[in-house]
Image (tube, rainbow, N blue to C red; front, side, top):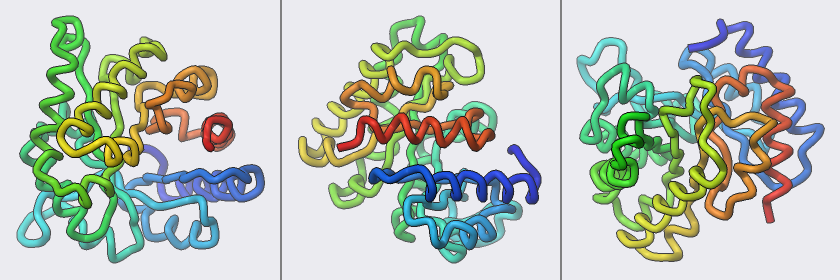
Length: 247
């Protein structure tokens, strides 16, 4: 919940222009502004083939008397291609459980939106040694009823909740360890080719200083960027670092 409409448009314009001018490698850059900015930013980036539009959330129902909610169909109608679902703040501040998140994922897929499915553990869960169990439960309860074709349209983002805005970063080893667990879990439920085709992003205080070490891991395919995305130069520098690892 950052930027008013005009500040958000300026930021999106700066990022889009920098990506067009400076990035020559194949890369997918996804902007996820607040709902109020979505349509205008979608129009702004129409001629930026590397830049795509995402919402930060969607409702768990397709339509009806749910005042204040925004449905997947509404998002699709204004040009969104992606939607973030199950972000740690939605889970911990707004009480969204895996059952609600599963409904949102299925609604998004039904409208041909790509869910960016977030999973992650708290510091208490990690310190208790339950972090792998927590992640596997989140995957199983929200994604494992999908078909193979459906899961291939999902992007997964690992968010160590204890490393978001706390000044405590996950080490590259910790990030790789969990990303490998996630990929293996997808492999066990579906198959190897499906697990390899899915992008798994790291979303825990990633910035231009630690991005190289994080992205060098074989199972880290990109980043879900929070605070660093509010500065156009910083964000595009992270994109540049990622392109150094793309094939």
